[in-house]
Image (cartoon, rainbow, N blue to C red):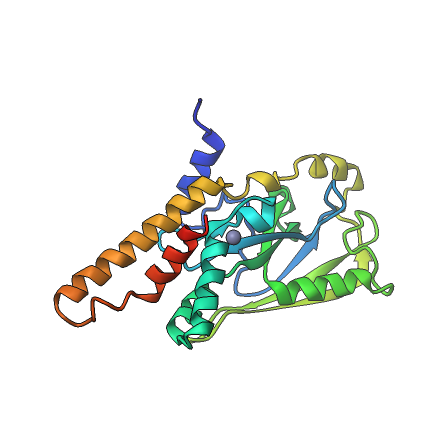
Length: 254
Ligand SMILES: [Zn+2]
C-alpha cells in the first residue's frame, strides 16, 4: 500500500499547530471579520461531524466510527458502560470521565473570507450554538439561502479570544443587511466552486479496530498508573478502579 501523501501533509500541519497559513481551516482573527458560506455540491453547507475529545495525544479528537459511519465504536460503548456504572454506584468520578468521553458534535462550512477571496475556499469549524443560529437564518424566509452565489448574504463574525483562564473564546455571528454576490467578478464563481476542499479528507477516518487500540492504550496506561500507586498502599488493591471495572464489563459483553 502506498503512503497517503495528503494525510502526511495533514499530520505535519497538525504537528505545527493549526495556524499554518496553508491550512484549509479558517481561524477567525481577533475582532471582526466578514465571511460568506459557499454552497456545497451536495446541498449541505453545514456539515455535522461527531468526535470524541479528551483523549491524550489526540488533540483534534477522534472521529466516532459509530455516529459518523454507522460502525462499531468502543469509545461510545465504554463511555456509556462507564456512565451506567457511575449511576449505579453513585460514583461521580466515573460519571465525570464518561461525560468527557461522550460524543460531541462539531460543524463545518465551506467559506470564503472577505478580503482574502484569492485564497479560495476555507473550512470554518464551529459549535452547536453557531450551527443553530445559521440554520435559523437559512430557514427564515427573510434571509433564505444565505449561500446563494448571486443573492446570498455575508456574515459578520466577531471573535473575542478568551480573556482569562477558565473563560472561553466568544464568537458572535450576524447577517449583513444586504445581499451580495459571492465574488465581485461573477464569472469567476464557477472556478472558485470547483476548488471545493474535500470534506471527507479533513480528518483521519479510523477503523473500529484502530479506535479499539486507542482506547486499550489509554486504559492500560491508567491501569499501570493505578498499579504503581497501589504499591504505595494508597489504594485498596481489592477495589478496582471504575475505569477497569467498566472495561471488564465491556469486554465480557463482547
Ligand atoms: Zn463513538
